[in-house]
Amino acid sequence: DVKVTQSSRYLVKRTGEKVFLECVQDMDHENMFWYRQDPGLGLRLIYFSYDVKMKEKGDIPEGYSVSREKKERFSLILESASTNQTSMYLCASSLGVSHGELFFGEGSRLTVL
Amino acid sequence: QKEVEQDPGPLSVPEGAIVSLNCTYSNSAFQYFMWYRQYSRKGPELLMYTYSSGNKEDGRFTAQVDKSSKYISLFIRDSQPSDSATYLCAMREAAGNKLTFGGGTRVLVKP
Image 1 (cartoon, each protein chain N blue to C red):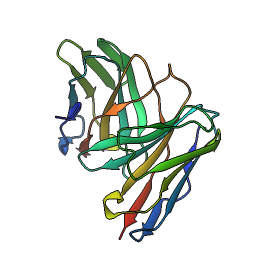
Image 2: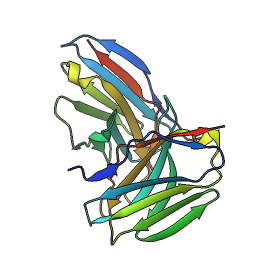
Image 3: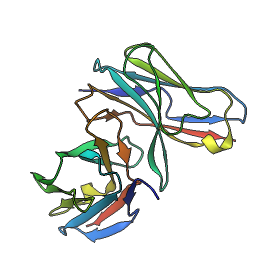
Image 4: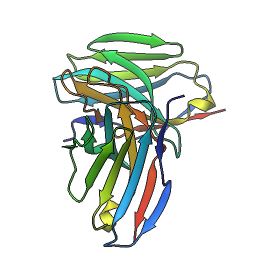
C-alpha cells in the first residue's frame, strides 16, 4: 500500500520559532510537493522537487524553504514562523511528469501563536 | 479572480440523491482534469482523472469536461453517507506536473 507519512500531525509553535515539517514517501516517486490548505482557498503550492537536491518555487514560497537530501524525504522549513503561517500543510508525491496523480499525506496542522 | 472557481458549499443532500459538483476555470491551457475527495482530518485522494473534453464514468461517479465553456463537473449517483467529504477539483497544463486546485466543495449526505 502506498504511503506518504508526515511526521507531525499537530504542532503549536511561537512566533519567530524555526519549524521543520518532515515528509517521507515509500513509493520511490521522483516528485514531491508541499501545499498549504486554508478554508476557501484550496491547496496552494509552496515548493516542489523533481529530484534529489533539486527544488522549485511554487505559488507561495515566501517565508518557506525546503530540503531534499534523499529521494524519499522532503522537508519544509519555516525559518521564523509567523501567525499567518497557521495552516494545514500537506505533503504529496507523484511518479513522473506524465502522471498527474498525487498521493497525499494526512497533513500537519500548524498553529503559530 | 481565482484561476479555478468552486462553490464552497456545504451541499446537503438526502441519501440516494444525485450530487452535482462543478468548477469553472480561466486558463485555456489546462488539459488534464481531476477530482480529489478529502475526508475530515485526512489528505486528499484521487477520485477521477480525465484528459481534455468528454465524459468518464467509474461506478457511481461521472466526470464531465467541457473545455469550450471552461467547465468541469462531477456527478455522484445513489449518494451514500460515506460520500460525505470535501471534493476538490484540480487541473494542469499538458507540460509540467503542477496542479491548480479549486477551493473545494463540502458535501453532506444525510441518511
